[in-house]
Length: 356
Image (cartoon, rainbow, N blue to C red):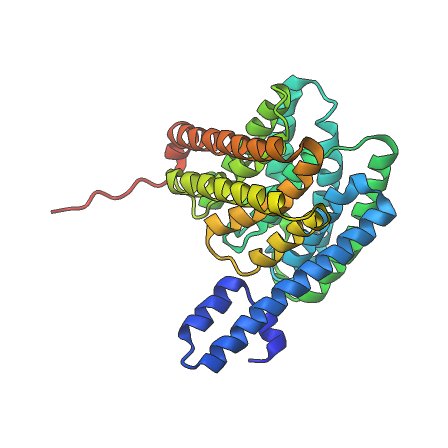
């Protein structure tokens, strides 16, 4: 394997290869690839996001972050239908990410749940026909993040222009990497196959309804940084294959959030103020080595709290991160149980009774 090819691999794959190595030299080669991969991604993220934020305004940094994540994912994962339709639905997906989160900040509360549910379901249906490949996590992150950072007026116009730039970049990557795949499958074929007995579509519906409800609750009740609730809930509901038991992920998310928040508090407290801005990139670097869900959750706290501490102060930001996470996963756990009891059991195939 060439070193460049190793850089394209997910950390989980690299760690499996390390475990299979028989010599220290082989292990060192793969560890080096993992470290270089992490450094390159973080460096590219800083340059890409800083450039777009400088051009389109700091209040559109969330859109730049979302585009960066989509750009990385779209290199490896397509939409499972022909390139012509995929380019159209990519444009529609970005239009949803521009329009709906900002509209949610101004529409009357009774409209929030149906608006979020419909928009988010359509977003998932267009982009995520194979949830196991991770597209659902990318687009749910983007949707929740932008909902927590809405803009209006001139800033919204700049966000739309930024999305257009992102579309040209992501569309070019999508075309270059996937234009020869799924040539015989049109998007309307995918639409016609909709069936809640299909576990993917049931997963999409659960995600859409759960995230719609938690975002609406956070906004209506004035929860500070309610998007952190949304991230936690979406993360619990995004587990695939579909399962009615969210308890393991519930506890893993809480453990990761508490550990990451306390680690941030300690590091932030003992480091000079001039180094605080490096905590976000540090979390990104460490994330490149993580495969366990708890560790990923902990590392994500560094970047989130770096921004939160600048807004709320260190102690308040840490408390908010933990409380919002607990609220989000608790909501997700209860919602998942109710959804399974009221909806899923009506469509899931019944297990065959064993004879004997």
